[in-house]
Structure formats: structure tokens, C-alpha cells
Amino acid sequence: MDFSAPHLQEILDRISDLKEILKDEENLFNKELRKADEQNSASAKNLLHYRALRTVDLTEFQNALGFMGLSRLARAQQHVYGSIHCIEYIIRRLLGETMEAPIDPDLSIKKGIETLRLNTTSLLGPPMFNRRVRIMVTLPSDAADNYQVVRNIVKNGANCVRINCAHDNENSWLKMIENVKRAESEFGRSVRIAMDLAGPKIRTGGIQHTFKLKDGDSLFVHKEGPTENETSKGYHISCGSKELFKAIQPGEPVLFDDGKISGIVEDKDENHFQIKIKGQPEGKKLKQDKGINVPDTALKLGGLTEKDKKDLAFVVKHADLVNISFVNTPKDVKAVIKQLRELDVKEGFGLVLKIETKKAFVNLTELLLAAMRWHPFGVMIARGDLAVETGWTNMAVLQVEILNICSAAHAPVIWATQVLESLAKRGVPSRSEITDAAASLKAECVMLNKGPYILDAIRALDKILTDMELYQSKSSSLSPKLAIETNLI
Image (cartoon, rainbow, N blue to C red; front, side, top):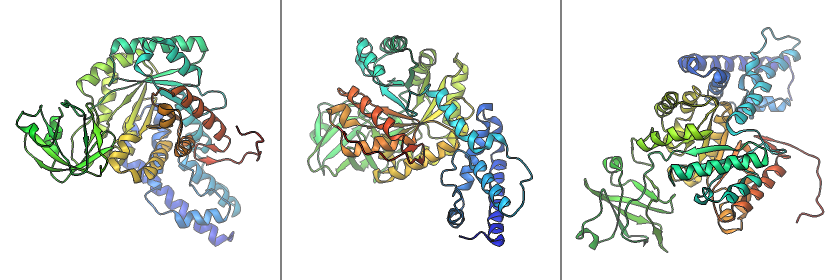
């Protein structure tokens, strides 16, 4: 532990260098800063400060601060400049000096924490009593005709509901929304309605019959259905994506149904390509309308499809926020915002970017800067597609990085895909699912998918989130009084 004047001066010199780096990053993105919504202005600056901070190796500096009992900037995501300012203030006081210029109040530690809290309420509605993290639940199709389905979902703790525009139709969606508003009225609390646009997701098309694919099998993917002559060899499906057939190349991996089936492209022509299936010794069924991922293929997908544009006109009229699928570049985000501004959007309508591709993760800071032209906005970590695109073993790191970057942007995060899935679908959770649910406390909202035991899943998640908030506040660990329960069942 070194409190000597030379050592303290070294720390001040390092702080001065960091401030210069932060300022340079602001200047570099000055054009984007000017285009941010007024309510996002300070958040845009803080995001750039965090980005700049992560471009340098802070290890030695952090250790020096930690040995003095000071903040190591490890949890400074929401208030980068404010944290650096506070450290500088303490060091100068130790040297008998005073600070000359006051910090911008919009960049203070308190303001950073408060901004994320307010943005979360603007996007996802007020929290439940004793629970900061919201719960979002995907509505099943029968929620259109059965009020009790929606009533029970809301009664058991859902703050938000999600309707997927890839399924059902406008008439069904409207009935679901009417049931949600009825439940809102019955229970006297706000329930936000989120709607997912289908986006340009590539899916399996026509399949003559369901079949099991095993290791070494050949699968032929056609622009149109195979001819009678072609069906004599291997297995065959169709896919309507022209872009896929244009871009796919031999040697590239192809994954189906959230990665449950995978293979390598062996051959292609203008009408079909052939895949050799890998890693399926027991065989796995492939069905129609299952997702296709090609993580190493240079696909030029993004933006709104014609269906998305039609659905968006419905969404802005009846829902509270829209989840945009497969945004990859700032251009995609700007196109969505342009479309929203051309529609009659009510004040406070929310925009959520679904991060589900390798490209979206790489471009995340730029996507957030583009999204800051709109308020309120947030991010959904669509962990299913993202894991397939980037590799399962990379997901732990990616989740943390997305949470950190979004926290710096004061952007609420929705933690999605397969949360308590075994419980929702089969009635019994796995131990790893409980750990995953507890880890979701680092987000602002957790999404549950539909299943026959969804009410059990909502109740379990509500208890986990409520209990664990005594020990975890966003990224900070807490230390409540130790109490040994005598009755844990």
C-alpha cells in the first residue's frame, strides 16, 4: 500500500492520460453525438467513454487503485467519467489539493445509475414490488381465445408480454392484446406489450416427409422442390432465400434448428447445394419451418422485409415496443427509425434491437449509437441464434460483453432464449437453468418462452429474481446479513 506523493502523482498522470483518450473518442464520433436524441445525449458520451477505456490495458492501474482501497473501474460502465473524476478528487485531496473544475452532473455516478433506471421504466414499465428485473413472457396462440391464459400469466408476475409476428395473424394478435389490457385492468398494474418482427430469418421450406439425419448423410437444399429424379439420392428440403443460394460456398458450415443439426457444404450449383451431415450418430429429425444459420457465409441480410413493414404498421398502433430481428449494421437501425418516424407512433413507443448474429455483436457500439436517435430503446440478447452464429463456448464471454456495453449506453437489456426451458416445457428445471436464471439479474428483463408449465416457470423465476436481489444489484455483489433458514422447502 503506497500513499507516497510520487506514487499518487503517477496515478494523477495516468488519470490525465485517460481523460485525453476519452475526449479524443468524443471528437471522433462528434457527428453521431449531435444526432442522438436529447434524452440519450449523456448516454452516448458515456458509451464512447467506455469504448475508449476498453482500448487500453488498465491492469497495472487497476491494481494500484485496488491496493489503496479505491474503485478499480471494474463496475464503472454506467458512469465512466464520474468514476474517474471521483478517483482524481480523492487523490488530489490526499495530496492536499482541490479540484478546479466541477464534473458535468449528467456524467456523474449517481446520474449514470439513475439514467438506466429511468430508461428501463420508460421501455419496460414500472418494476414489481421488491423486484427490479422485469419478466417478459411469450404468449401462446391460445392466448387469443382464452382470457384465462393471459390472466394467469399476468397474475403470476409477468411485467411484459411478447407476441411473435412470425406466427398467427393480425386478428389473433388483436385478441391477445385485448386480453392483456383486460388483465391490466383487473390487476391494476401496467403490462407492456412487445411484438417481434419476423425479420429476414432463413428457414427450411417444403419437406416431403419428416426424416432423421445422421452423421454422414447427404442433405440437398433446393431453391424449389426437388425433381422426381433427384429424390432417389439423399434427403431433400427447399429454402426460399435467394441470397442464401447466391452467397453459400463449399466448405462453409450450415446449422439447422438452433444448431441441433449441422453439416458442411460439399457441392453447389445455381439451383441447390449439398450438405454432408456431421456429429449426429443417433440421428435428429428435421422439420419444416426450422431456422437455418450460416455463420461463415457472407450474407447480405438485414433491414425490414415487406412483411415486417406491414406488421410494423400494426405494431405501432397496438403495442408498446417493437423487437427488431437481425439488425447487423447502423444502416439497418437507421432504416427502422426512418420507418417509425413515417408512421403515427405514440409518444414513448419503444425500440429493441435483437442481437443474434456475429456481425451485430462486432458492430454493437455503432448499433447503439444509431439507436440513440430514438427514445426509449433497448437490446435483447437473443442467445439461441447468437450461440449458433458465434459458437456455444463463446456465449459466456459474449453475454458479459453485451451487458457491459449496453450498461455503458444506459440501454435496458432483455436476457432471452431457453431461460428455465425444461421447467416451462417439461415441468422440472435443470440445475444449470437455475444458475442461468440467477445470472440474469445482470439484465433489466428476462424473457420466458411458452410451454405447458409456463406458470411454474414464471413463479420460479419471480422467486429466484426476488431472493437473489438481496445479493446482486446489476453487476455489483451485495452482502446482506447472513441468515440460515430453518425451513428451505
